[in-house]
Length: 330
Image 1 (cartoon, rainbow, N blue to C red):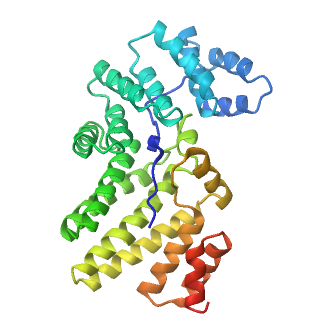
Image 2 (image 1 turned 180 degrees about the vertical axis):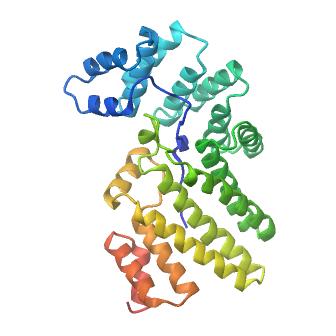
Image 3 (image 1 turned 90 degrees about the vertical axis):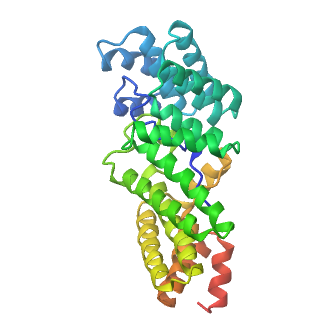
C-alpha cells in the first residue's frame, strides 16, 4: 500500500511557528485581489499597529509563499534576513522554501541548522530537519534523535506529532518487511498516539502557510495515516504472529479511520493535481475506497460494502479496484 508522504512540510502545520501578523481572512482576500502586492502592503500595516516595515516584509514573504509565488517570497525573505539575521522564524521559513519548492537540501539544512543555533529549544526546526532532511536522505539515526528532541520539547505540537508519527510508521514498515513483527507492532502503536493528537487539535490549520503545505488538509492526512497503520502494519503483524482475533480489531479500526478520511476527502482531481505538482505520493480518495473495500472483504466478508467501495475506486481510476471488482463479480 502506498504511504502518504507528508510534504515536508510534511509540514507542517507550521503551526505557531511562522506566525504572520496578518489576519488569515484578510490574507485570503488579498489572494483574490487584482493588485496583490498593494493589498499585502496595505493590510500589513492595518492588522497589527505595532508591526514594523521589517515584519511587513516577513508577512508579505509568507503570503507570497502560501500563494505559490516562490520567487517573490524568496526575495522578500532574503531581504528580511539581511536586515534581521537573528530571526529563527525567517531561517526556518527560507529553509522550507529551499527544501519544499527548490529542492536545495544543502541550503535547507544550513537554514534549519541556523534556526537551531539561534534557539536550541526550537522544536519545529528539529522536527523539520528530522522528517524532511535526515529521514528522506537516509540518515535514520539522526532523524530519530532530532524527532525525539522535538517531541520532548513540544509533545502537544501538531506538526511535531505528525512528523514523529510519520517517521515511526515508516520505520514500522521497514520492521514489517524484515519480519520483526513485535517491533513493528510497538512502533506502529506508538505512531497512533501521535496521529490521534493531530486529530484532537481543534484548529490545526490556523496558520497562513498550512494551506500551502497541507493542500489536502492535515486532519485528512492524519486519518489516512491512522488507517494505514492499522491496516498495513498492525493487522498484518498480528496475523503473522498468529493472533487473528487481535488482528481483526485493527481492521475494524482501519475502516473507521478510512471512513473519517473519506468524509473530509478532497476530489480525486484535486489530489492528483497536487501529486503531479509536488512530485510526491498522497493517499487519494480512490485509494481510500480501495483500502476500505479490502478491509471490508477481509474482516466481515461483507462483499456488498466491499464491492461498493471498489466500484467507486474503479470509477475514480484505480485499476486494482477494478481487478478486485471483476474477481469477486461485483
